Amino acid sequence: MAALLAGMGSGAAMRGAGTAAANPIWNALFQAWVPEIFAPLPDPPEHTDAIVIGSGFGAAVTALRLAEAGVSNTVLERGSRWPNDPNREIFTGDDLPDGRGFWHRTSFTGVTKVPMTFADFGGVLDVTEFGGIDVWRGAAVGGGSIVFTGAMVAPPKHLFDTVFGGIADYDELDRVYYPRVRDMLRLSPMPADIYNSAPFTHSRVWDRQVRAAGYQPVPNDSIFNWDVLRAELAGASRASATASRSNLGNSNGAKFDLNQNYLRYAEATGRTGIFPGHRVDSIGQDGSGKYVVSVTKLAPTGQILGTRTLTCNRLFLGAGSVGTSELLVRAQATGTLPNLNEHIGDGWGTNGDVVLARSVSEPTTTGGGVPSASRILDESGVPLTLENWYVPGIPVDTLAIASLGMVLDPTRARFGYDRARNTVGLNWPRATQDHVIAACRTVDRRIASLSNSSVDYSPIGYDANAAFTAHPLGGAVFGRATDVNGRVHGHPGLYVMDGAGIPGSTATVNPSLTITALAERNIEAIIRAGR
Image 1 (cartoon, one colour):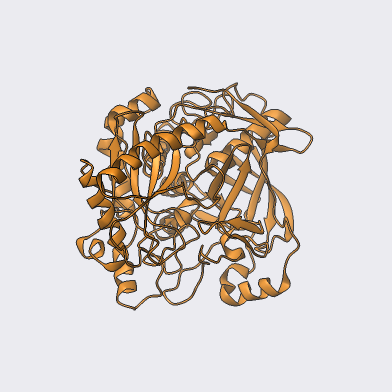
Image 2 (spheres, rainbow, N blue to C red):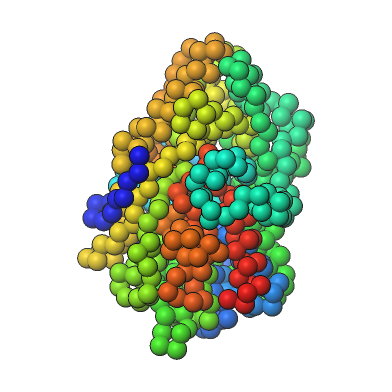
């Protein structure tokens, strides 16, 4: 089922900073707990050869490779640059979160199904509400690498080819770019000592259940630093990745996030400047051909510290599927980038995300281990992957085993522009979400029936009663809105470098590895060609 859906009006995204009155008591607490993010923010240069918008996987690759090629670049990130500490609570927990957890919102309903309220603040997870779907995305230096669960998996070739249709050569990715990313991010499967520890009892039970149903679980490569988890287990670090904390960050740096590799290496060249607290509001091109970037400088509290217009010769969009698509759709609608083609805003999908839980026939002890140990692929119906997951925010035995499902769903939506409110949004069909949930439930129930799991839990997720995705993809698809290497049609020197270029799905697996590998491939081609 394919759908071409324009979304405006009530489907428009909720945007902006400081959406509720600041709470001075909470702000004082946040400043005491994490003073680093309250330090004065530096100002980016007025003109740079290249500007990179965003600091997630695609943007971080872009900044490093440009710097290595001798190209000075400015990285603009709306969120804060959070530190790590083995003993301090830098990030909040998602069991009882405070404002450090969410990007300028004041309420959220988690897996406990108990609504939680907290002070408005510039936290690390943006939950953007569109018609029919909530989208989770990072709002911090490091982007999604701060708030994801760390699994970085290559898709099956035959499924990749059905989705990408010649946009990228799987064999080339498998030979060159997937290995490059694995090396840069030190990816590896879960070691035996971690897998056999108490917090990962749920992983071992999950594997036994799927084996009883006739599946062979496949180990997942992960970005987690296993030595930090060992320190947690030994009591040498505050518990985090072994205590159901990930979606709102790991305070001790348990994830080998982009601040510890690509972004750090880029800064070390002396040619990359990273500027947190700078939200990009619009992009355009002036009469001389320079790109014009309008930015708002924000304090973590949401206070507006100033606005500026920056220029560059080349502009690289890495603000994530939603952020990059918003900028392009607005630029097309308002005429600041008049030569964008008809594919801008199109091809958006959710990667078929579903979260499920089934009961267990044995205790899982703490159940708090975050990294995903394994996955299964089922092609008996619509192709889908179930991935071993943890129960977010509940580091106790819930008598439930969680799975993240990713379904090969062909539905695509289109971003639209609401001129009256200057917002960009979309609508996602409820029938599609019902379809992907049903597909995952069929497999999950089969596993439950063959492994003596008697209770069927409803899908669980951070917005307990609404559809969500943590893997938004598309909106400026490679080979359509751009050429196959991300060069935007109609505007030389403008590039898409992130998940906006992927056609709605990474073929039943987590997108981060493929986004990063494609960014490596694309920036290499751009630098080699000199444009």
